Image (cartoon, rainbow, N blue to C red):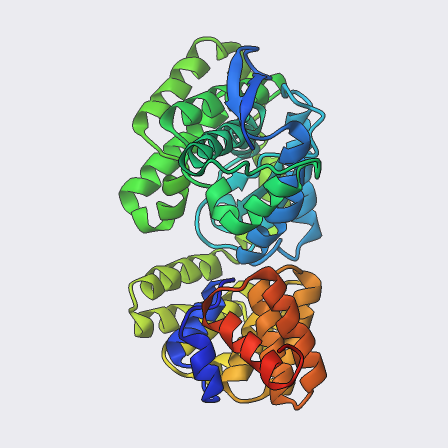
Length: 442
């Protein structure tokens, strides 16, 4: 999270504006050629296999937390992992450390990081009809990993950066440390940026191949693609994020159908696993009205229709009061309306529902600072820091909280740690001024 230029000045006046509260809640190599694991040809990449794994370890947890963490249902996560394991053993890179989780996010999407850390949102899972469609979804993401699409995109970006600046962004003998630093700076959004249509076509083809190898009917991919085409027509707002990262078209559906009816025709006699899918996802599908209400609320929130958004989130909470995502979203919605005291109640409730997930902890910290409660702010910011270390903005806010509590030495330590991460912007100026004023620097 980068602190914006107005924040420290307002902190000096002992206030945080509503806009800044909202902002704080939302913020937070020289490449070479390698042999393609899929076709054997030469591809331009910016990461070795070990670097791909390292980026996953460093960046994926941050993005999964942005999507409100894995659902608190061990059975559903285990089921997703079982389907994934059935597929990933049939891929071109079975040695990768694949992992799978269903995320609390309501938008419709699935994504993977270059080392195989994969997330499937609950918003898409409740719309699938059978296990074969789920296998098509996971197979497609496995296709991106096996074709090394993220590594290729990162490699292209690195070439452009080196050409423009002449800087060796990989660094020296530190291994892949330089690359993972880049991952931190760019954030997950860069690694999850839109694939090209050629990338999507290749991932579709590989995914369909993998699902057939694993014993699924190839028409599961057709069913998945048809579902997305239908939803794009009926409610495009629900799929906005997915289509920004996975360009969709009826042409992809038609290609999948041609493959299912041609090359893989014999596979379509196989069981599509609908009964197993329905049994394994029953607990999540029971709260589909809650998920749909959250989806509508998020669309309204993005349009700044706060009254409509609040109504949708209240409907979600009426149906499922202890839904973590609905409580977090209600807190965001109320804060957007300058109802920070009420927002704090929902954020605090979310931390009790899912204490192992980081986002609600940060939200309570920021809202508590806005309510001039530095002790509570520090408590939750510190919890966030333990759950999701490495957020420089949280380090700065911990310093602000400690200063508000009169703990000057501890605040100075946090400000110094923040300045070791960045020396730019008003927050850095504020941190330096406090250290200078307290006599720690001259």
